Image (cartoon, rainbow, N blue to C red):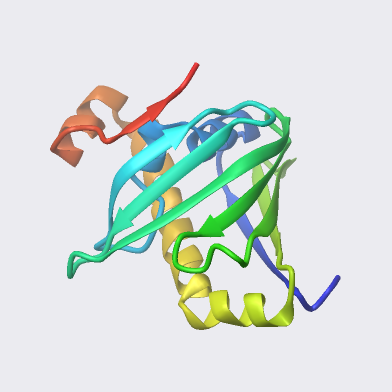
Length: 169
């Protein structure tokens, strides 16, 4: 593996199909994407090869952090490849590959972000990428648990407010 890459592994106790859905559907992403205390205020997804996504999260002090990219490969529910651009550093586009492998009654999610340079990788890691991923993964686990134990309608009501997220079909 190139040292210009960052990898992460996450084991969840749900089937790969559900994990892929929660990873790619706006109505789910708003519940887990980003660190605690950050609100997802924009979440647009056109989940098809060549389709784009745009996500904006608002920090507790009101700063907006935007991200966008393009889907390059979609092998539902096994693999997703997309570009990833942080609006604060658009010259440092990375390519993310996420796999969803059924394993022992759950799913092993493996992600790899490949950066164009060491400078780009270091910029993302110094900006809190690992912390944000760790918190997002904890929140993903909690959200999967919640939707398995309650109806989605009840959980969405508890989240409160409008839904800023939508998918293009």
